[in-house]
Length: 549
Image 1: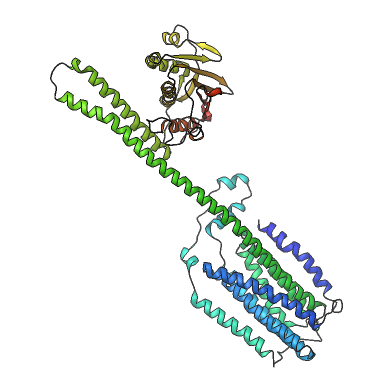
Image 2 (image 1 turned 60 degrees about the horizontal axis):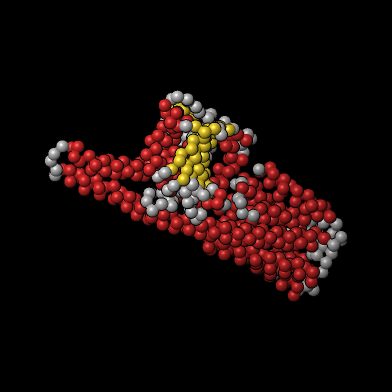
């Protein structure tokens, strides 16, 4: 990634900048006047002021030393540029004075800004742990390693990240401020040694120190891998550093004020500022979009939490009611029987009621425990090979009393052919379909769906259709009841969702997770013309496709 960034943001932009540096060698190619210099520098003052305002505001809001140093650097640079341009314009007739005043004040602004950028990047910039992880992953050459590679622990001292070196900060600011301010003020009445050299190719040697500092700041930018930062302002800083390096190089061989090198260097400085502003604008737009998306996400999560809390409250009420319903007859009849004397056969009906409600209570407890296992991802499967047709035949025999009592006709179909499950039970004619699954859990799924179908089908038929396709078993259970409420249907397999006045709303949620743990799928739909509903689930025949919790 670093190579791509270097090529894109350093090597490619360096090509036109290098051409500008060659063109600027001719001092007479583009000469200008004091008024042109005034306008160019005025743009620099405005641009740097905007940049300084953003970074200082950002530093104030986030207590960010990196932004603070850059903001102060641009603000002081803007102030010196304003002094530079004001004096140059008002004293434009004093050519000898401007010959030394302009390069010396330019140097004052450049040395301060380059120092602040270097300190900000070298000392107060850092990657957060997530960005370091991304950089380690990106350095892996093998695509598979990017997924499976175990990264070494990050040696990050959180105290150092949170450290607030106020004392050092004040020292840096005071020292650099004194240096820059002194240079600017002294330039009114003092010519620095070798400020401008007429007889050498390097006419302005004072441009070398800022050039070195800008270059070191660029090196530290890559050394600290700040290109990994997602915020586009860091890309803007990267390009800006490169532009400033070339502007310092070009300014260093300016023979006199307002010659080609002088004008190109000033223009490049404005371009660098403008690049920074564009980066800040794009960063602000992206931040606004991300903030809006996060606000919407938070709102959606809040609505889901509210809905979840509502469902939990409803579940508690339902569970309390469901638990109380079987407990009351168990308790009452147990007390009744405890006070009675006689043969146990006399109280057989009472005992059956106790057994029935005990089973209901047991089922409710198992549903709650299964839901807890699913949430903790500890639902285990005891896999075995068994005959699904035989299992379903046995289950239909168990439910025959209920279906006969409700005048419900059960149709059992396998591969498009009707099966008489009574004959299957009598083992007179066996049709087998073997699967590799958890037998008890599949019974739990079938029982839940069949009981619901029987409950809602007051009179009519239930069709069970089993077939094999694509190395999977498809089981369809179709009833002729009233169908599923359209409001409930999209959330039918969620927790605590039920269309019945009784029940916890956990049954189908558990069924869904059992089937998916086997590597299958389950869904439901209403039949045409609102004539009942159809539940379908699939099971893979190949044991290799099973998914364990």
